[in-house]
Every structure is written in structure tokens, then in C-alpha cells.
Amino acid sequence: MEQLTFSIVIPAYNNEKYVEQCVQSVLKQPVKVEVVIVDDGSTDGTGEICDALADEDRVTVIHQTNQGLSAARNEGIRRATGDYVAFLDSDDFYFEGKLAEIERAIMDHNMPDLVIGRFAETFESGEIHIDDIEIDGAQITGKTTAEVLDYLQSIPFIYAAVRYFVKREFLLANELFFRPRILHEDELWTPQLLCAASSFACVETPFYGTTTHEGSIMNSRNFKKLRDRMEVAAILQEKQFSERQEFADFYRFRVHALCYSAATECAAFSAKEAAQIASACAELAKRDRAILKDAPGALGLFVKLFGCNVGIRMAAKYVKTARAVRK
Image (cartoon, rainbow, N blue to C red; front, top):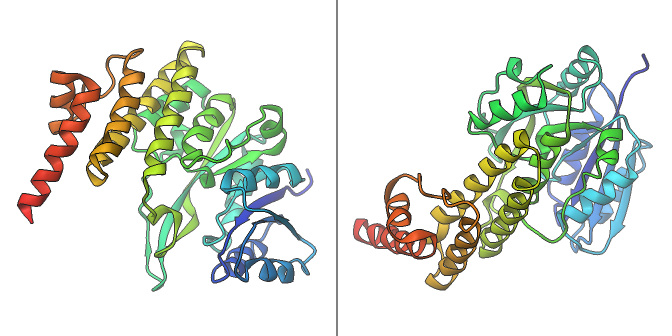
């Protein structure tokens, strides 16, 4: 069989400090790659750096007006020509030689729909911290969709799009594009990806290095992220009630997780903002009364006593008061 080609899609926006390192980490891999950089309307020197990198014939650069991460990834998918597609954020990188392990897993397991991998957090100081959970590859490789979904529900799995290498034909056939203009797009895309796939492989050693710095998306915090998380939960709940049972249970699991994470963050925002999240959770609870009832601590207690709408707001106020007292 001919050597595989990997299409690595890199959305880039105002990351002039990191983008060259990012691209070079792909080009140095001992596998056949094409790099598709989508410059999403950068206003610093990112676009010029990307154009310079395009002197390498394995690099394609697309410039577009700023439309957000999802639109940039979608354009990259459309332009990709390789056997497998993966996503790499422009301030992150691949560890040296690791894509050879991904290729070996693909070849050894008959070209699965997707390969699941792991990441490690790195800091500008050079320190590396493997903060991703341990993944038991034996519970994923060669398993059925239902078995994989059951396993992922049993571990604190992070649903990041960058951990997957996805067969391009499968990606396009299932129209697995990202929803534009929302944050937490991975929380919507990944469950649909996992449910659509019928064959899997897993690489247990981290291949992906995240770069933690002040301006990184992972470190940013705003209310839109919280509001969009509830929008994603509402979309997944629709799927929960329309998909066959093995998928419905998984979607329900994700809806509950998103509601819990949003509700527990309400204390960091204003009372008005917390009320919006409480109202969104209450709407979902109309169709699934178990939402947040088993939450630990004050949140679960208040929701049991007063329902989502009042309970979340009371829990947020309680947490704020407790934090103030401790200070």
C-alpha cells in the first residue's frame, strides 16, 4: 500500500509568535503531509509569515476575512486532499516523530474512520506537563461504536477536535463540518464524529503539544463561552431524542455534562448572566428532569429543592458568598 498523506489543517489568527514553529513541527514529521493554513483575517504579521512558509510545496495558505475558528477549519477541510485530516491550532505543535505512530496505528488497523490520541500541556518556559487523562487503547482500538461510547463515558475524557485523525472520505461523507460562530464548537462536533464512526484506533502516547500562554483560547474566559455551551447542549438534546438508543444515551450524557460545567461556572459571572444560564438549563430540564439533580454539593441540593432555574442562581450566590468570606 502507498504511504498515507496527512492533511493538517491549521487555522491561524494573530499568532505571529507561534505559527512558524507550529508549521515546522508538521513538516519535520517522518510522514507524508500537506499543511493547509487558513489565515482567518489576521491583523498582525501572521499572514506574511504564512505566505513565506508557502515557499515549501507541501504548504498551502488560504487568506479569508475573519470568520472564526469553525469557518477556518471548514475551509481547511474543503481544501484538504490527504487520506486523513487533523486539526492543529496555530500556537500548538506536534511532538517530534509522533505522526509516524499515528500512521502505524492506521496501517495496522485497516484504515479506521478515526484515530484517537492524547496531548500534553507545554509552557513558554519549556516545561511539559501531561495533563490529559490516561486512555486505555484496548478499550478503543477495534471496538464497536457502542463499546467506545460506553468507555468514554466512564472516564473524564476531553472532547477536543485536535486529538483526532479522521479519514477524509468519512469526514466528507458524513458532512462533519463545524458550526460557525459559536465557541465550544468541539463539544458539538466531537460527539457527532464519535457516533458516526464505525471503526477506531488509539495511540496512547501524547502526540500533540498545547502551548499555554496569556492569550490562548483555553485561558480566555467570557460569558459567550458559557452561553454557547448551553446552545450546544440544546442541539445535542435534540439528537438525544431523535437518535437510536445507543447514541441517545451518549448524547444525554454529554448534555448533562455541559449543563453541570456551565452551572458550576455561574458564580464567576453576574447575577443577570447566571440567570440566563439557569433559564437555559431549566428549558432542557423540561424534557429531562434528571438534569443536575445528582450534582454534588450546594448545586445539587438547591436544584433538588427548587429546580434548575432557582437552584442554579442560589448555588452561584452561595459560592460567591463563601468565596468572599474565605478572603
